[in-house]
Image (cartoon, rainbow, N blue to C red; front, top):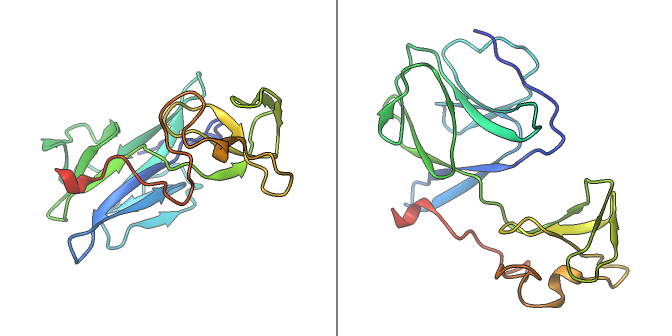
Length: 189
């Protein structure tokens, strides 16, 4: 079976939630291809277009719109259930909060929610939602995980547009990076 990976202009990160031995849900950030079914989850740099034998694969793909989607790909001989429904055709585009169960392994949950964090701005240029000045490629910035707008967050230069107020300029997302926490966890199910 062959599949296609592509270089994405806009990569979306996701999380795979698994239950620890102490009944605590732990998120594992998905940045690269992941092989599921083992313990723990194994991340691989996938360069081949052949599905590893006997493995369930989780990877990003994109269409002409360059929007990334996370796909689950499984051989027919491995029983996979998503949201308690059998995966019949071996492939599924995952949605936020999908429950994934492989064979008799414990259920894991897929989530697209991200936490606010300072990153190098990946775009060519965009306007900061708070100060209305340009954010240039490589500048320290924060993308609001709730509404997706960008703010400066230069620690050295004193331009802390994200943390200037207690909420995002556009929505009600808390801006304290030390208090950033997921709004949803599987523990509430």
